[in-house]
Amino acid sequence: MLRNVVLTIGGAMIIFGVMGMVAGSFTVGIPVAVWGAIFVFGILYERYAYKTLVDKVPDGKGWARTTERFVDDKSGRTVTVYVKPLTGERAYVADPATPAAAPPVVEG
Image (tube, helix red, strand yellow):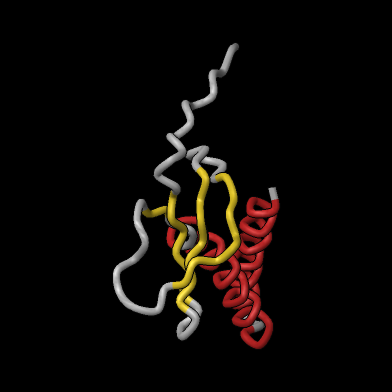
């Protein structure tokens, strides 16, 4: 829900920013369009690049297991979070003991 709201607001900001620039108000139009693009790009980037599940702990030194665990909404698998303290990078590792959940049955 919030994702859709932010995408809508970002899209509207891009449109109004471009309209402002077409009308000749570059001092208002450019920042509005740029911030709208940042909102849209940020939401789309987060959706596809952030929190990708992997099946094993990443290779390399410095990865530490955290106490953070949750059930992934899409796969139904338990996920453990690993962090690399030097860089702040996080890895989301699916627990091999939990099988992927069957997709929900939609009756209609």
